[in-house]
Image (cartoon, rainbow, N blue to C red; front, side, top):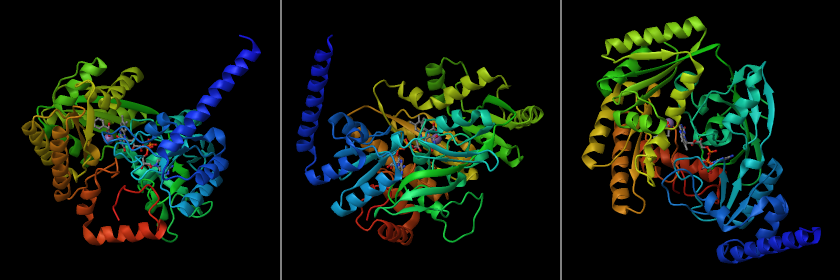
Length: 491
Ligand SMILES: Cc1cc2c(cc1C)N(C[C@H](O)[C@H](O)[C@H](O)COP(=O)(O)OP(=O)(O)OC[C@H]1O[C@@H](n3cnc4c(N)ncnc43)[C@H](O)[C@@H]1O)c1[nH]c(=O)[nH]c(=O)c1N2
Ligand SMILES: O=C(O)C(=O)Cc1ccccc1
Ligand SMILES: [Mn+2]
């Protein structure tokens, strides 16, 4: 093709794109004035601005069953200064701002309940600092968990918090995420040292003080704790400083099946009581084992099972596995298979991390409704067994998987798309499970957050006084209710 023809084609494409953008703009952004659009575009530049329908749809949904709620406009800021200017602009125009990390959330957190501006944070993707002496890394919100770990692998350090999905680290901070390694290394709550946050009015603050990298601090109110788990309703995270750990010299992994849920959970409890520093302690019920076998081509027993992992020196991981094996035997276990072979281990954990997709494959085309209760260990077996009973009485399919070392488990209800009756039934069971967990001295969400689906349960968990304090905090930081409105609490 001649250069002229290529130029002509590219001009045509650009004109079409501009025209389409213009049409979309007229169709969708009744809330957003031309003046605001122009100003927003001038803050981030033409290439970091879109109102295309495809982008709007993509940004209104995460990996949950929640109905997509597209924003009017998507901006891709490239600096904290730009985020601050966007916040000032949105405050002047009283337009909602919704931060978007990688969209792997499970509670509909990125949905634009009142339209507005989504800030896609993926283009702020620098790893700002890594200190192997002081064991921390400072990252911008576009950096994902696996990118950080690939970047620092040669230093012998890693960031262990692992929700399975390759989520943005800042998204993990604001959802207070955890996953399979939390039993040993804690959740995001225990692993954030400092954060840079842009507030609704455009102010930029550091939650532990301007340049603090200390492992602990008693200085003033715990602002870091306030923003961990805020789900974008109190501010926009523009950087996070996280704790790093040494990569363990040796790792062993194990699988073991049990005749009952009680035997499996008793083993989990006793492993922890025995002081074994287990790194992963995961439960899968019979239905989930069968789903994982099918999806990942495995042939494990299809009964209640534990997947375990141990970190330490080569002697220590052997010792830990053998001790756990003894405990499992005392609880009527089947064969306890353990290995240090990297390939076998990664096959096992890949199957575990694919549990969501294995569940979905049981009913092709289905949506999933996922619960996330967390209770003290002594109440865990009863809550799991009661939940399984409720699932079987309902006639629903809902494989169960859980980070049982932390008392946390998920029921993954499979939903036929468009079946509103079934959705209603599942929602009722999920609400009942949340209440069951609260009455068993636990919480309605251990790690996925509140988003749009658990607002009522959080109200019940805290009671009027607790919620009223949360509302006051929200009002102090976001008086116009424009920071990710309609999530976590209602005003
Ligand atoms: C297969 C699979 C498996 C799992 C999970 C997901 C999937 C798909 N998850 C859930 C998910 O990975 C977790 O909630 C992540 O922390 C979400 O991070 P994203 O970057 O994707 O946030 P996403 O973009 O989905 O946003 C989530 C919320 O955070 C807000 N937000 C995002 N970035 C922000 C920023 N920079 N500033 C302010 N607010 C921001 C958003 O507005 C929204 O409210 C999970 N979780 C878990 O804890 N344990 C687990 O075991 C799993 N397992
Ligand atoms: O894998 C996990 O631990 C999750 O939190 C996601 C999930 C939830 C329910 C079934 C499968 C995966
Ligand atoms: Mn989980």
